[in-house]
Length: 440
Image 1: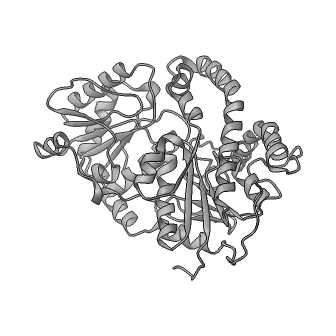
Image 2: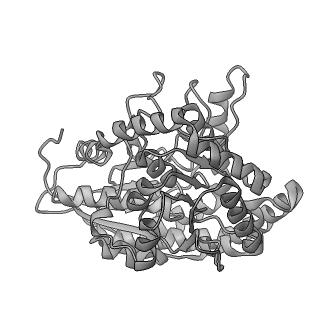
Image 3: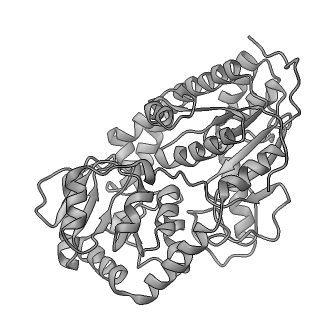
């Protein structure tokens, strides 16, 4: 699969929750194994984890992630205060986002100047990345965890509703890209004041500026989950998932090992990076659902901080590698983040997705369409009885179990990181002894 490539410097820029970072760690490890010098730049809170996995790290501010744990951030994620409450929260958060984005832009620029990369791989949440690539005159590759940028008539961007309206799917992608126009003013300040570039004019794409050499858009998704649309350009590629495999180096704490050995496989319930306005109530709904379904349970405390004395049939745990834990479960219940969904699909057990926001409803629909997911229970409609019904379905439906096992076998036969590395190496400029000079 690989062609011979000279050792090069690659800067990976990503931002978001753990699920937005973990696949890029796997990609960094794959590039490093090929002899490339890789630096991963993301939120500072993930630094110890990334460095422990042997990947050189440079930090970006945590400030944007910190907003998730504010009252407005929780309202946005859970929607408990209704549509108007979410809109008001979004407006207040937007007022704070400008200064925070300016700091993130400068953090990314500092990392690029220190790394002097031959190529940049970036998640679109780091909007500064293609502009930095333009300033440094190096190619850039966009890495996506869900289809949201490249238009297709086959399906809408993940998370948007599926509607039987002519031209709707393609129009939806245009709307997603147009949403980045709100950042044109701040990005132009960054371009002119920091990068020394001309400002973008009205109509020019903030995420794909005309002066940037964005050679490919890699989708870290399995073609068994999302077949490649026939109307995509050749630059849009589905590589397979970028899985981070740490199961072999993980040793469970005694209480978890004992719990797993003391009875039948439990059901995992966890909402990952989703915070909650009322974590106590969310935990109560979860435990009541497990009890009603007659299931033992392992509950991930997550960013919501679910903690309580729940009895002998339920254990609350801190973060555990999903690739180690999920295959040991009878079913997995989660929020539907792209990374957690991928690990759930690879585990070979049925799932129940409780989407909160963003692309999560789309992955919930996909799980059902693939025949591996029980009826989703959206967070805003979450009750113990509804969740118990879906858990019971996930535990007992033989078709869900069989389909989940088949999908898992297919995913284990793929190597998405290897495919992505090969695609990246095709875009690397030839290294030479006299490396280009970079702005101070």
